[in-house]
Length: 472
Ligand code: UD1
Ligand code: MG
Image (tube, rainbow, N blue to C red; front, side):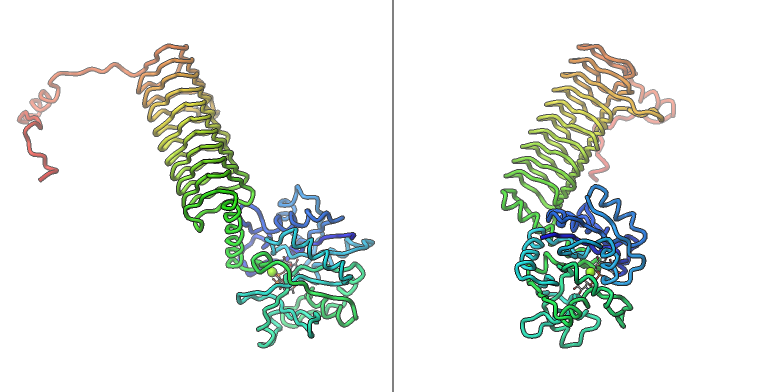
């Protein structure tokens, strides 16, 4: 079968109450139209044409990596008029034209394939996918005469009796090329002033063409998105399907409803996901990991046996096997947390490499740093990586021991096995195995407090033996 595919995506989407074209609204990280095009590209059509409005740059950008071409509908004068814009690019094409609405993102390539097979097996000239809608939707109703498809009546034009029909139009059609000429016969609708593609059905029936409607897929898959409520519902359908898929593959969820996993993410067996976890973009989480509550992992690679403790954010980074991150840690883009390394409470890591077995357990900022293996980073260590103009690197060799509250004024290098005394500000390179200490020496001034009180004429006193006020 010769196949061309058309996506209708030029509508304004007024019901979304948004300046963004409707088909660019996202489900997880990707826009509706990207899902639709992905399903269509799997069919191997000769041509895939996306119909946009005159300001279609957003849609073109979203689809810049896809082998599709574009047609422009000058004004949004209805779905019939939109297909006409694509038909102008199909002159000379002989075969079946598959038309899909850009606001039906959950449709699967398998359903479209099954539909096209039925269309050609039954030698139909125009057919469509219908489904039974449970909810109070504004879909076009399928009017049958006996079993035969007669027409589609839009919700706005339907009588009370017709509104009770639950078999509805999915907005997905297969049309033989020679019927495209009927597009010119579509009358303008009195209620909305638009040219309805759905009127092609009645016109085809009247012209004695072979038409049919196939009930394929279900409401979840074929849901059309017109409002934010529809978008919310569709996102949740997709989310449930993704999580159920991971459960089948052996992932454990403590609380499915609060977890969001991107369709492009992967998770290994026996990993446990706690409530309110968001796994976004192309993230892969290994096997036997635990991701605790309120964490967000975006475009990152997490190895096997990793523990992500509560309220941790990981972005465009990789965490290698057996490492542990969090609670309350922030791993910013370009970081690598090595095998069995430990990044603890309130530690921020940016564009840094943390070597195998290295620990930064508390309250640190490690930015533009390369830290070797088995290094101990004391609490409160800070890399001063920015001089107001440029970012500089801090290099710390393996087996170094960094005392608490150290500041590294980068660029600076710490040799392997070196020690830094707590509270130091390091401005010069430290040779391997050396001790660097830069704090001022401590002085104890004996009886200083007593002298101070005497100076002020106060009675000397110590707290010893006094009742604590706090306990009164
Ligand atoms: C449409 C169908 C309805 C069907 C439903 C399925 C018509 C008249 N009605 O209704 O029978 O049950 O889809 O979801 O076709 N578009 C354009 N140019 C326009 C208008 C729309 O390209 O001038 C595009 C939109 O971007 C959208 C698609 O066509 O992707 C469908 O338009 P929409 O306004 O959502 O139609 P519905 O009211 O949902
Ligand atoms: Mg719609």
